[in-house]
Image (tube, rainbow, N blue to C red; front, top):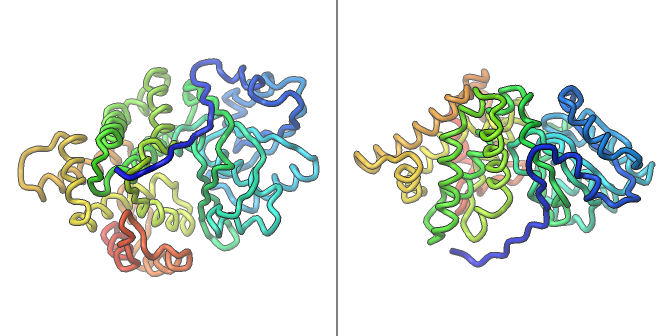
Length: 385
């Protein structure tokens, strides 16, 4: 296990009726901008609860953040914050709204072109406004990490950044707020959480017993409850466990001190940017092919994954590995998420463009050993057709 430091300053406020407590965690004289997405947060009453909790405070609102938050929309929020001299942000929504809020927080006082935050992946972020979150869609873990992914519509680019300055100061997690979510979004959240865990676990052995068992526990829990989370819409215990799994899958803890992959995510981002396919669904397409193409590099952990997560012990090593990958595909399909590019009418003629985008963005040496070249990425995409 490698040396590491683990730091996470986000305060989690978990459970029913916790939105009422947000005022306790925002400075009394703060000038607040509340950011949210579409109409669902209004229809399900979440925005109303937040407004009631902040009654008497100085609050302005900014809605319309997309499911893949765009630079163009977020810069409108940046201008409002600057013009109105607002000093605290509150994200109400899922990972996209929270990711967008992180960008706004970093961009408001950025001394150069805010797009530089994305092209440098956050290394030039020197300050950010404080912000909190009210999570309505478990998926990305953005409520307890310092990562953000933003799309620029003009150039069809999707880039990420990270900075210790954009950890949420607090996050409210009320599982009842997921009851009215469209089932497609819930399924996406399960798949997203699963692949987040895989990217930090399914690499190569690193003598990290605790992290391995922790990751395996999250994966097994998702396999157990994933389909039930979708069919039992108002089962509080299922939704509560799912919400907490999604947070733990990407709050940095299971990845501390272990090698990490993320090649599946980088390729998936390009598919989303070019074809506007849900992020989680691109991951479900790319991951099985990635595992098959990189079977030799990941052999030891694939066998461990087969045994510990899928209870596969019979047959040859190759048979167990293929069974584990097939089970992974089956898990995504049980969520009604396709695992082939053809399901989205993407054919062989798309691959050159996707590889070109990876090249433009410097994604030429991906993976835990930086051995996922453009040629390997091409083979992965071809296998995913």
